[in-house]
Image (cartoon, rainbow, N blue to C red; front, side, top):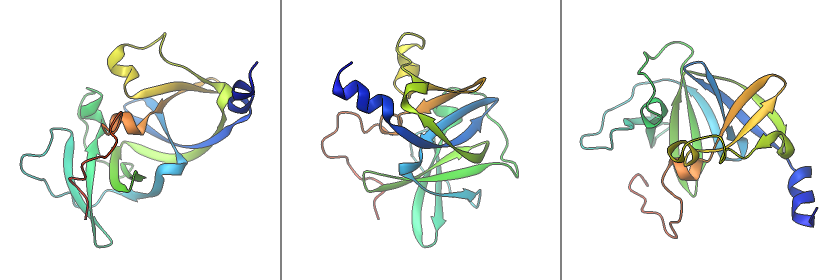
Length: 161
C-alpha cells in the first residue's frame, strides 16, 4: 500500500446526510454553511430548469437547486420536513432543496466505495461514492460536478453578489 493509499484510508470526514425520496445522500460538511427551513423562493425567468429560484438569506441572494429535477426523480411537495442546505463552493453560495436533513455522520474514507463500477455514467457525474454506515447505503455527492464546476479553471459567477 502506497503512502497516498494509507493517508486516504486513515482519512475520516464528516457528511451532512439528507434525503430525496427514500434514499440518503451525503455532502461534505466542509461545504455546508447552514441548513434552513424552506422560505419564500422567488422564481427567476429563463433560469436553468433545475434552478427553483432564489431566496433572500440575511440580505444575500442565494440560488436554490432542485436536486430532484437534476436526478430525474419524481417531483414532491415542500413539507415541514423540507430543508435547504446552504453551501459555499468556490466562493459561490448556493442552496440545495432536500426532502429532509437531520444528521451529521463521520464516515471513514475506507467505508466509501468508488461508484464507477456500479452506476451509469450520468449517475457517476454526481455521485463520487457510496458510503456504508451499518446497513445503510449513502450516496456521496460530488458537489463540484453537480454544480458544473468540473474542469473549469475560472467559474463564471452568474449568481455572484
